[in-house]
Image (tube, rainbow, N blue to C red):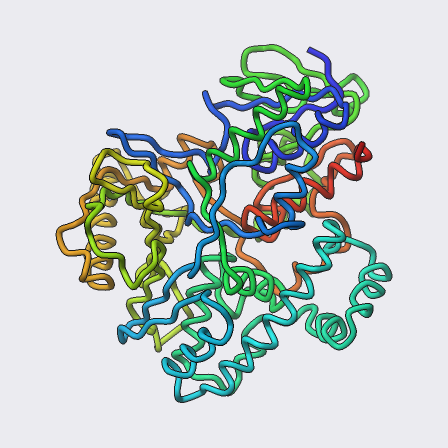
Length: 497
């Protein structure tokens, strides 16, 4: 099969790129190894329940933001979205709560009540952070490739924003922790837990500017999608087909195909078929799998192999729950971030002391009558699920211990749930790997460093001139960031019509 662009992987990044390029007149073929599209955005269905595998937090659906902009170009309608306010509630180990969202004035009043020991500094931290985040998001609306633009271009655009832009330039490589001096340990853990959820790292790891985007987005309110992120994936796949592109399911790719001169010309499928691409090969796999599986380690430059060894990611342990529909809302929100220990004796470790609870909206029936679907997310060190066990029985024992620990933590953090929830299923990193073939079943973006925010080149570039990597591991993390990267790449490859 011959085409202009072949896309390997049907996650949101791959689907968005393929939909945009197909609509712009390119001959596009998307290959997905699973029987349906979505990747990590796909739903998990069991016993009449449809569970999301993520946190259910979706940003940038406001008018003129990235998702409406993308769908304005496509021949299909966007999925149905509803504004969510608040975005979530954070409950701390002392049972104090902070409602994230609901407007800046109420949020600041909440901060003062919960953190009286550093009230003014906490409010000041958020005001500065929200200003930087709002400024960056405004610039990203106008320039989706801002984060990888040349230093001269980036500086010019930032300075056009006055003092806010100058401050952004001054904080370019600082971690969030540099701005937490003088703030209480309790407040720092409040920030750590949110950053871990939104950016895969704590305040010592996440760049200040990345935190500014993530925390300002949820502060201004998020959205819920009817049918979850799987509905978004389905609409994008429909768009590809409507525009004349091909979406091939159950089509696992083995590796890149090379010509006699050693140039990548397409991909070889596990079936033995070759799909050639005259313009571009787009990998929607993780950065590890793009090189380890597609390119091949023997063709990967040594400096990239070393860089890949340094990158780390988190695994997820998910519990899918059934919730009684008449159960009381927990603090008036469908989403709840629970921190169960201050961890005063070391760096922040989310694996044993943090959970994110996300219930499907009442207006989106994803469960049998009288029930609601709930996803509980816990972080876990992914590699240990592959190296710790001598046999399947030992793996099952560890899974049971993890389930029991998370169940106890959930009820300790949210005692009002009582007997209104029951476990339907759980998924560990081994299960993620079986479903997605992502390295070690790791999900989401890589654990960040302060020096990764501004890049010297576009994040989607690889060691091969016609191979591009669009994924959550090459963006800042979060669906909106992946969508921005996809649009920026599409603009480079084909002009908007």
